[in-house]
Image (cartoon, rainbow, N blue to C red; front, top):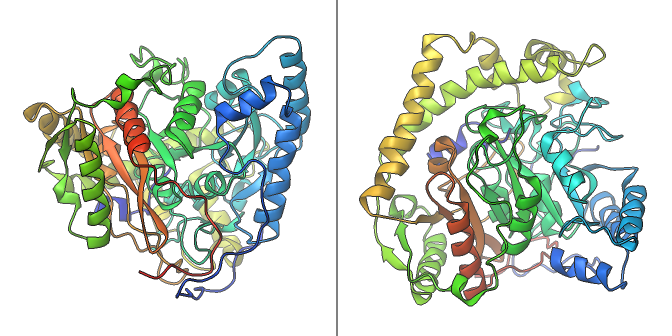
Length: 538
């Protein structure tokens, strides 16, 4: 579903493509690209709702403004390549929602709000779902993914599909995050030669560049957290089971989840509420204890008072980049000023050991899950098995593998069924080390409500020859356990965003969102991108 680098996450945290192998990174205060003013820049979901409610703008007008913005910045202008296709029915859907509003039927806070979906989330409309692969080009799903159906029911306008790292970055050990054969190399809107991180790269770049009100990404290990951090966004990686995975092209049935990516905590929380619900096709969603209306306490004075909470500092994720560490120190002091009790340091056991077992398990799970998904596409599907995908890539290597190969796909295809003892040992070990002996143990020992760690370092220069340059991160601890993680903009390094992560026990979203919102109010660091050609001076 989404992995930050096929092996990078485990090590760190436990239609035209760019044909240059590596773009120059200009320095010394490079000037921003001139893109003109935009009426909806940094406008929140609540503000969009107010404008529609008061008749200042219709959903159709708002949708049209975002579509024009996509054309200007994604297809022309800086060519972010963050959106692979727009929904040809988006304006018509918006008009129908306007008629509902005029008749007094407002479905909720997302009514008439344009949202982008990552291109591994199936939609039964005139947009395709390909995971960035030409092997699935033209593939139209028979039905919406549950997430897409929930958002439609909530009144969201599904604006289109966002680019991603092909096969959610589970294809090659030296892939470039944000590259897909279908969409090309997605760019970071802060500095265009820098990487947006993966695999929800298009969702991150598009939401940050104000091409939509917010976007949906997916994560298996790091691919909501890292692109949110690198693109100056709030990202919520939910507990596995809070959001259904049915209809989403999978990697791991144990770790996969979709989640919101937005410019504020309130927007991400509102989008998360519109995505949740029990799905009979995903048993993990049955009996979730997390309320859907997670925004109800945001904005109240008590929500900003963290004096009742204990937050541990994951120092084991520090000491890789002193500039990032300095941002984290400021974040810790902001939390202390809000009354939080800081427990420093805390140590999560087995952090490095767990990655080996996680990767082995994911190879099995990817083959089983992808074969099941492809079989469900029907007889007209261009690829029906992982073996078909591998053969397609080999037959179309010039388009599919111009920069890196498919060794992970081949490795996964060699695995047997999920009944094999080797799989059960790998997954059971990863679960035990990450949960009972990992996060559960440290949270219990120190009576913690959350753990703080750096979400990622400043975005690296995109390098299609050598692949990604991950250096800092803490996403693996929560990802392997299937526990929630929230990242919030915390500062900048040479003008590039850096996020702080708050993660904790299963189903602790209400607490983590409260911490994230309080931190955001006390230390607002979100800046809109300016599409620069190089980094700022120190």
